[in-house]
Image 1 (cartoon, helix red, strand yellow):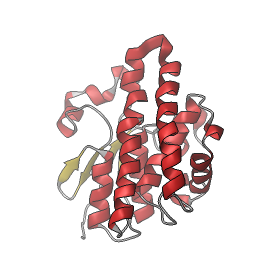
Image 2 (cartoon, helix red, strand yellow):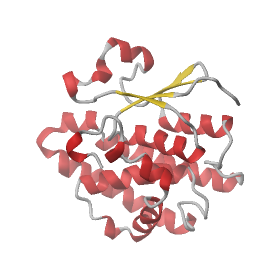
Image 3 (cartoon, one colour):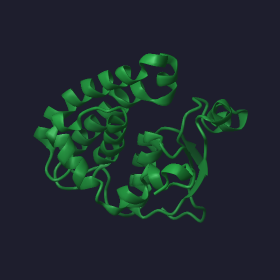
Image 4 (cartoon, helix red, strand yellow):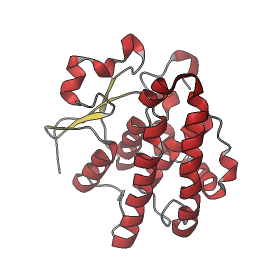
Length: 216
């Protein structure tokens, strides 16, 4: 599906959901523009009236593409997979495709929302223990699933949406001092993925809005 206008990603350098979309764009070889939305500055730029017109949930990402605006990372990933050429992000095989969606949903619904910025801000002083608990709870479920589904990557030997979800979640686990070594399958897959160029260029350390003190 051809388009004359680059997609626009409204996101934040360290947002897991924004990072997922950056990985997908990179894997597909899609050029896009970024509009930073600082989730902390001025009480959070996602709360402005202007941004609320893009995403009434006041979350990132919001992606403008083909005359539409989408505001959920998995919806964006599946849309570009269905409308753009390049490597498949969901397998052709229906069983494997269901496995990819299962793993993606486990991370995107069962782990990440419980330790995202808005929730952590509400928790307050106990935020680290809170995040650790829910990440470890999720990884305890994810590890045996991946033992059944994984090859080189989360599902077999092709990179998929599941891998796109995994890498940002492991990054967050490490930020919150979770011992990822307890989960050898997760750790091994992640170590393989982070060496791939699409995952490197999309990393939070090298985005337009990455603070200078942590910019790679």
